[in-house]
Length: 203
Image (cartoon, rainbow, N blue to C red):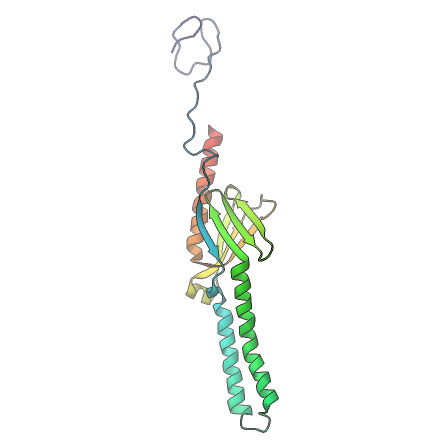
């Protein structure tokens, strides 16, 4: 390395020439392998799974069994087993099933989740649409919550915590299949985004 003005020999990395005092410009730094402008790619899409309602269908089955017992062993052979009473029992048996099915339809159609290399999205709405997103670099914690039946059917709620995000500091992905895998996918991508962000800052 030599001084561009007086051609004096200088040690590598010198900021000034020892002979004439000329400031030596630093060599250009290499561009980071993964810059902030890298293309955003989609990694995963998800919706509410019907398996997440297993506990509700289990409770409905118990209710139907109880109604069946009351009808055939307590009421059926009595004079009270008239048309009105049969209608009441039918409504009590079918109404919860209709309600659970409606909840499933609304949850499955109205809410969609999407993970990219940069962000996590939640889209909600049927006629109108609202979209919330979290920058993965802002995520502090990812957790999974499951009840017993959800563990059996491998579904659950994935909770993403991003305290510094003003619009969505806590995002819950409800009724997700393979929630442990989804959680690890999000955590892995968060780690990658942070490493790349630190690499860029250090440069």
